[in-house]
Image 1 (cartoon, helix red, strand yellow):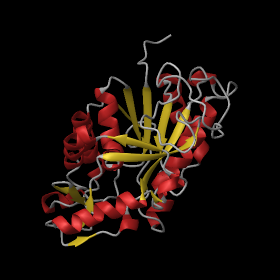
Image 2 (image 1 turned 135 degrees about the horizontal axis):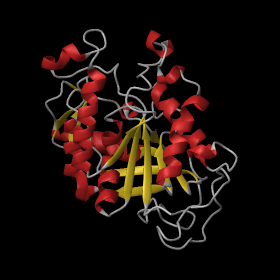
Image 3 (image 1 turned 180 degrees about the vertical axis):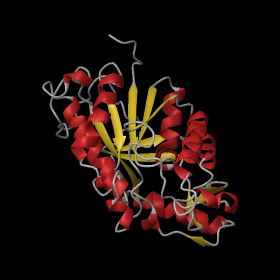
Image 4 (image 1 turned 90 degrees about the horizontal axis):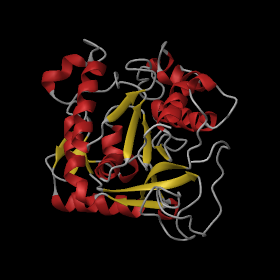
Length: 315
């Protein structure tokens, strides 16, 4: 048996910068606590826009070298978060950023969106069986906001979690492993509304303010099942976001993407349990993604049935 950390967290994201915006405080908190945090990024984000004018030549319609540049940004962001295990799905550049939904880039050869799920999933199966995470975090079926690469990341992550636990599937990729709990990233609507109220009251240097529904993953409060307080790591999260300088402009506790519309930075991050057994009684929110996992988050707490998930070797 490999020497593995007691707690192992896997995050699957579409592009460099998604992880820092969405889960940066969570990643920093668990890394500081000694958990093994593994990030898998599915594309290099080659189709992104570029904020600094001096780097505008990197875009896909000019030098088409943004993806390579963003590898360095992601590496810098991971250093800020204390995360040492980061991988690109299938290796750097295996799958290309597909662009926004409906663009011709969606259909180009090698685009992530244009790749059959069962062709991409085995790359993640191999990682799952090697790392053996008890917890996986990814997007909901809509990818949080409908970007094709986010939707595809969800599909690949969920399919890989299923296949990784199947004894008969690709034993050359390692021994079967079932992830105990799968979470989707969320933001409670009340929290989003409070964050935007705070932004408007404080004011920023950005020309405008985004709308609440521009935040990926905003849902009704009662859909949120876990709350991770990352307030002690707020500065690390902001620093990681600043490392993605082609994509993000940070102004104190606020940020903007290339549209120059301000948004709040959330140091407390929110999740919905999609598969697995809740670690707290029904009606309460977890404050630890490993809650209820024996040997990782304490004893199982009677409080509700498991959310259905794939069968296989238990965590």
